[in-house]
Length: 287
Image (cartoon, rainbow, N blue to C red; front, top):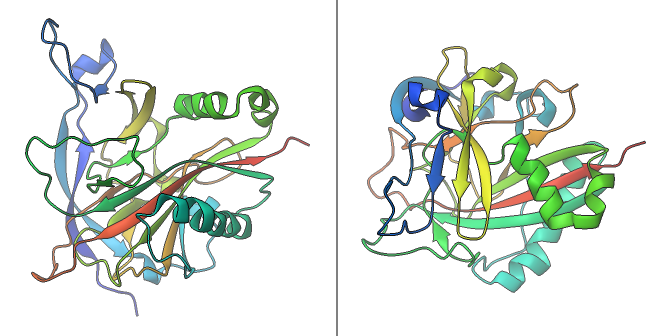
């Protein structure tokens, strides 16, 4: 029996005529006092009410290439995710094994980032050290794709240097693996958009400007044809695997836009969501 859909609110980018002459941007460093333009962003978002389906009703044999995401059951042996050494020595090899099992044609996996997230209030005046991978970040609430095509190219060139030219001749994918660290996510689940029904024209590239690196992400504008899914009561063994980029022109879904949302039936005593997200470049060598 199909589960009842939820009505939720998601934050989408709202198109501005400004973007015709000024590229969307977000600045994540302090702007100098003497700067004439003190804006840290030119982005405008709006809330959209929509229905979201329970991914538990999907065919569990779906390939990640069909919608851009899949949920799979994989326990972990890692107990302490705030121990950076334990994550990198024990957890990342577990994730590589998952990727090699779930994805076709994996010749090489390169992890370029991992992040912890928690649903808890930010302290006023507090700062976040993005170089400390064990820092807990807040859930991301705007529908987005982590890496634009240009950012993916830059990542490969930055991290893999002399090997980049060879690797870019084959298939390149950016894959995220998202796992709750609590028994059941009841407050801020992750909403996944079916990438096979996303129009490329509804994605807007946005520059992310940091002190030592400038990348770019993609924000999604709302379109009624979009379909969203989440997993009810997602547990620490329910692993979400999703795409941010896929260079293959033959797949139905090259990405899966996503965002966290407040569950309308969240219990008052719900355990705050905690999760870990691993980001990987996955390569298939050219034949």
